[in-house]
Length: 74
Image (cartoon, rainbow, N blue to C red; front, top):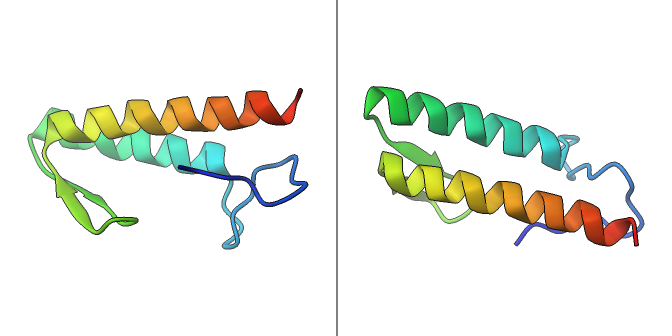
């Protein structure tokens, strides 16, 4: 599960990347994998995913980012 740094309004990771940027990059990578029939490397768990599994991961990531953003604005 993705979590913003404490008190963060911009959702920036310790490497300077935003969670929205991460989700966008993941979606772009998944789209490429899905179109080419390739594989997607998921670095957090060091997994190599097939296209359909990568699409599910992208949907899950988007849902987590949106939920995190909604909960911080309450």
